[in-house]
Length: 457
Image (cartoon, rainbow, N blue to C red; front, side):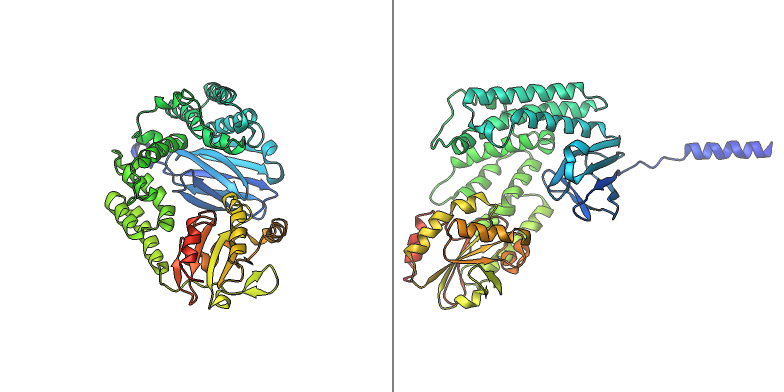
């Protein structure tokens, strides 16, 4: 009897013991023909990133502590969307050489991820190849976007095992995506249809005006398309604020400062400042306005680090150096080699569209000042694997000036020294190797000629 009583008491204690909640998700699987030893899991806004080790046999497994949302699992150029939340145990397998036909996602909580795969497959099918969709006229484009919206909603409604909470947010996001794609049509059609100055008709954006709430925190966190719509709203508002004494960069921060939701306001300020502070011509004003209007301590600390770094490349400061960069014409070149001459530096890459669009203007500039006391130095930040692509493009486009290949692409000390986060980037350096302008004007900007002429070269 005593034994039975003891067992009953033990069972009672065990059953009454508080269950520890699972505060993590597990992601595991196997990659065939892997291209690296790591996978990365990143959130769409890049605020979260975790590296997962891939074993020699292609297997991987790791735990993640995340907010419920859509994340990108990627290796090299291969990537897929996964919906991950704590308690999930998701398994992923695919062959790198043929990911589309070999991809399998299974396990606890995989239903939502499989919906995302079906959704993206349907969108890819309806959008068609390349950028052809943007060459369509207004009616055809809108009809295609409506078809995509309706088809994706149908895929969602047929999906099983998905929470009602996710479905509700996803339905909103599908509509936001439709509206966001209407927003970009004018600019994209002008470019891809080669119709300079193209403007959409008066009623084309009627559906866009349905969105009047730009402070929905839940949608902002869940839907990139809603985030894009909100961003565009404040871009339009900022255009009304631009004045001679208030440039576009500060005008945008001022417009965003009027957002009533602190999470949205902080994120828009931070998203702009991460890159904007490296381009602004009003560093002190830009930094002060950001600091006065953001209430996110972590984000303010990050922008402060950038600010302190950028102060070291202010006008009159010694330029960060580069040494022994490969010269297209043979041998190597260092910044020191150009001492005694003014130097206009173009940081670019073969894959960068805006960079390539500046090439004709840069060639004209080099021709205009050929023989003068100024060197035009183009530094490629292409990866080593694209070295031959770099050489081929220089030859095909008959690029002039001094053509150099950076030693460690984006990790080169020269690039990091200037805190370069986007290209093209142009820098003007004086005859002593000191900075005249760490954000010089582009070759296509007529004002650059005035700046160079003022040097009396």
